[in-house]
Image (cartoon, rainbow, N blue to C red; front, top):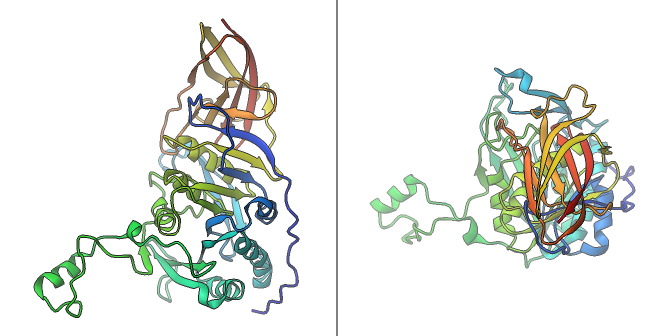
Length: 425
């Protein structure tokens, strides 16, 4: 492949606009600045925008860009992907990984890796996830950007599954290139230890000279090698969202535990199904995640709403946020003293939408000010679940007039919005 970096994109910063703030459901907490961001926008421009505040401030970046596979990937939306119930789900356009040639792909990748390097803290680490199509070219780029001595590992993520290959060994691993910003990088060995396998335990039990006469702490376990086996997120897996090439939470959990600490900032600028943000949030890390596809941002938002104790986060528009359909959600509101109950009863003018089966999530701002939508109560449907609660309740602390705003999102990412005026006595 011949590449001369002649077609590099402009990295003018995006204008990031606040769309919504999301709080743990039922939270009455005071408004405060959130450190978590879910962004819709082209990641090159989004990273450039974050440079002003977060240069050298991100402790871990996981990047899962297109692989140069030459394929267009479909996403499955609806409930499950059971072939016995085809009416419950359908396919829509996911993302395209088709390039004019390898040079065009590298023109895309190179400026993004440069910005990631600038965003990383002095103790930060980059995990770049690719496969056999482009990993070799990316390693040369990273050697140039970080320096060859900053390579920590070339990890093989090993998995099983069907393969159409009949005249070669089946390709069943991805490559994760791990580069540190400096020699003082974070690596928490004890956080990722795993048990020794049974054969190792038998060997040490049978011979005192095993391990060159040194007996390891078998109960403590070992630091994993640089090949990791985690099952893929298969069709009926409980984590499955239908978004193509979704990564398992266990893979990101190991990466985040190893290379960051609680309170550190973790970023993923190729968000996809949102696994990085979901796992970072569970592990009490601050996070930034971004994608140019509204469907990816919608899936990530929905997954975060399904978390039992998600930290507050902000939705930002870096260009292209889908418009809402005002006044088209049907909601009934009942006020009893200071307790108010909102019930979602339907959606107006929703072509081909089956209510409530096609509703992915709905959210309520109990004190809408006409500007930023603040999601204080919400319900979301899991991908393998059949029911969605259609009633939310809130108890106000004081009397007065309030505007209640309700936002409804379907599985394809369409959004409906309505407001109601109430008097709290």
